[in-house]
Image (cartoon, rainbow, N blue to C red):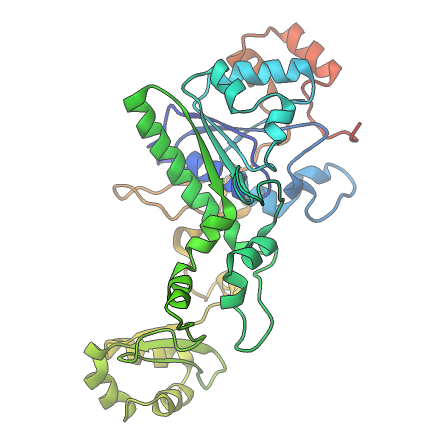
Length: 384
């Protein structure tokens, strides 16, 4: 890992699935030490996203591996008084806590923000709930699909006249939005802490962040003019979404500045002429010709195309971890440096002893006793 902007920052990651876990993942990619903390009776649902099975099934989920690389792993029972006390001691040694539980869960566990602040007045807590901590929907739970619906996103991504469209569990687009914004908010809070000396509770509503990305549609609606599904540009731009002769789609926008060159290329500045030009040649060839004329033109890429060695280069969007697994990459570059090779996801509880002895000062006998009691664990157990 070569990005060390957040070196020296310790993050306790209570995040699950994507929104919370990916937020801390960004912080880890930027050099923070991230300790993912799961409970023996409540592991990250991404671990059994594809069901349970034989062997160590909780270590085999590709979505979990992709979102939780570059992290340490501790399995600590926060439902027990002893586990709670150990967690609060960890808070005293840390900078950030990230969580995306339903509003009220941390308070129920006895580790709400006021309690965390007593343990460490400088702690930054990032809470990424569905609707935020206040308002009529504060207690609601959500997943990507419900956020796409309640934010207005699913309406805009539908086919014209068709039913609302959601990206599904393979993407959960709102979660991706939330994680990048939340990581930025955490870094802003850390900068503010340098000035004030105090931590802060970040309250991010995932629905509000998702709605932020369709704000232009809301503004247009206030003016009484609902935006068209297609084209999306102003009248001065000619746009098309058409198929090349090989069946691949191209998205094209011809701005006014390129109109003369484009007209010379395709014969006329009409949608019909543009579609005919695109349909008369392979998509990639048509896109190249249109770009040379000053248009913005790209072949529509499917996720499977990145698995093709002859397909488009994903750059840093995808990566291999140091165990050879395909994982999400980190596209951020700082001063020409990127995140480098990610550390493979840690097995559940691999870093228990580091937490217990290296951070909390417990000796081996004390740790072994806590492991025997089930306060620490290295495998999930049936909910009590």
